[in-house]
Amino acid sequence: MAFKVAIIGRPNVGKSTLFNRLVGRRIALVDDTPGVTRDRRLHAARLQDLRFDVIDTAGLEDAAAPTLEGRMRAQTETAIDEADVVVFMIDARAGVAPDDRTFAEVVRRRGKPVVLVANKTDVRAAEAGVLEAWSLGLGEPVAISAEHGHGMAELRDAIAAAA
Ligand code: GDP
Ligand code: MG
Image 1 (tube, rainbow, N blue to C red):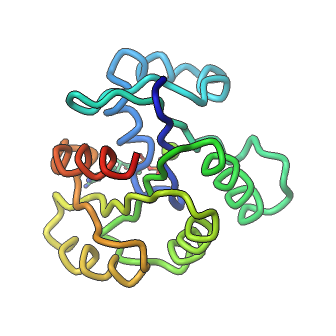
Image 2 (cartoon, helix red, strand yellow; image 1 turned 180 degrees about the vertical axis):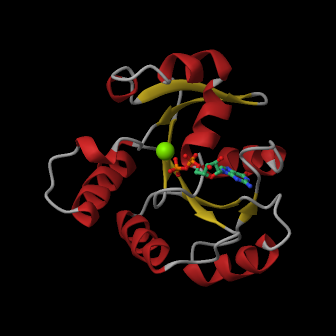
Image 3 (cartoon, rainbow, N blue to C red; image 1 turned 30 degrees about the vertical axis):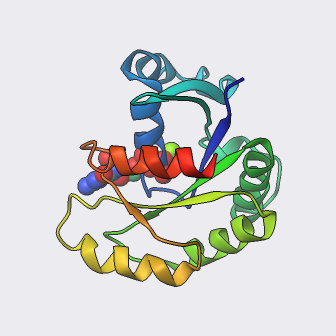
């Protein structure tokens, strides 16, 4: 049976970009259709030889909680509980933001295996952000570019080790 990976993080760090890369172009295009995405939270994914199901945490606006923080938290906790492995993503170009620390705390409390991912490392300014990611206390950050496909071998190994 395939294990489940949830991609967690504050908005705009690049979760959907990685999600689309993992599930493949065909499904990503289908998901561009309004109203289709929200019904498909679990997708078959592949990263090199590794096969798993990936959980989408997009569509925060659909959740029931009254505040944005509440919605993010509720959806994040649901996804984490559903998952075997959590991929926690930050935007290394932006560095560690206060919301990243909030999310990291939620992830840590749930006690699931977590792979810390520092995205957008195709941008030169991201180097400092990768180093700063260590301060989240979630172990060694895996530097990737979801957009350009950099760091996928390292991400594969980190997910395999955590699963
Ligand atoms: P989400 O809100 O976490 O799902 O983030 P998205 O996947 O929608 O990405 C937010 C923005 O970051 C978009 O403009 C993406 O094109 C951009 N982005 C995502 N991954 C990368 C990356 O690896 N490098 C760069 N430079 N930009 C990226
Ligand atoms: Mg998204």
